[in-house]
Length: 194
Image (cartoon, rainbow, N blue to C red):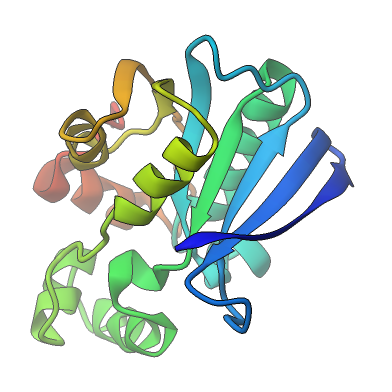
């Protein structure tokens, strides 16, 4: 995987440079790094590694807190010269079609973890190798990881990247997302303080 293209992106959260990463220039769905103005890789960099969630990030679904987490992360890194890495691994790695099937199972009483395993997938099939490669390409050695997910912290700690601290990203639950978030906390170990 390599950096294929980049361009400045002014946003409501500040000035960013968007970088696209893929194996070839023909990839239509590259991984993305949003690098905020003021980025300095000689000190610990605030970093959010965010897995794609089309329903939440784009369409504002209240079934999860993903869109709200992305917005808050953009604000945080925009103010602090950080980086958001946007990984194309929809639905904790199962893809959009299977995520929608999992939603139907959730509506029949399955929790989010059991819905994934009922469909034949791991509870969380995400990988973070691409994020580590992007951080290395950006010359980042030490990060302040913006996450509630201990598995993500462990994946980065087991890499050449040093995690100096974890920054919590707590979003107040909505009525539609409370069960989902409680499952993430109780079954998947996410640090949500519910």
